[in-house]
Length: 224
Image 1 (spheres, rainbow, N blue to C red):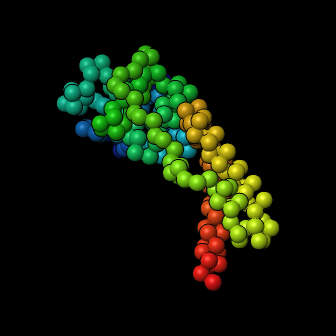
Image 2 (cartoon, one colour):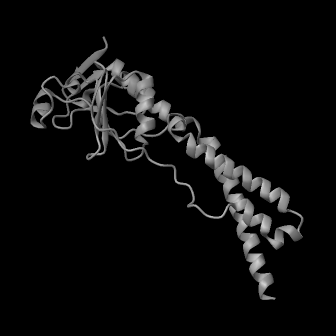
Image 3 (cartoon, rainbow, N blue to C red):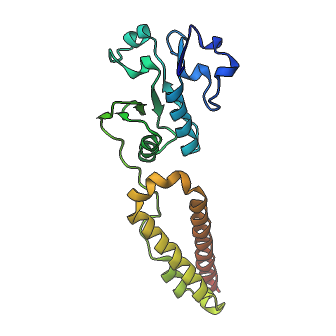
């Protein structure tokens, strides 16, 4: 069977708890404690959790008919079938989340911007509400290009390192510009880019450190 019903989530045997990131209490009815385990739906929820690589905060999963009525749910809500989940966006980028959810097989999407969650279910394919706004990647404010600052520095010129430092800074700027332009296409791949992101951050911090050193040394030289 693909579904099993329990009068209370505490009655779920260990053998039925095969979704490591979701406890029976998390997916049980918030009003009654009852639980309908829909295996295909939970398989997709676990696949989504594995895809994103970070916790999913489940605001609502299974709802008993009486609780669904009490909270004003749709009369044929997929929550009553155990195949719908409301997931908080507090720790997710909504664009990347939606792309991942569609990839693992969710078909129904409801966007609740004011309440801060996205509803996903197994269909039919439909959507409602307004999508969350795209979260911009935070880059530094516009300022004089780092390579120009370094090229003009007496410290870097005197140390013979201006060429190397300028090249490194230019590389950071090119990467930054490419990321800014391709942001909409890159966002769905964010779960796979953590390592590369940290590489860019490390390179950028190195360039910032070199720039600060050059500026401070120029200022000290001017005070002599």
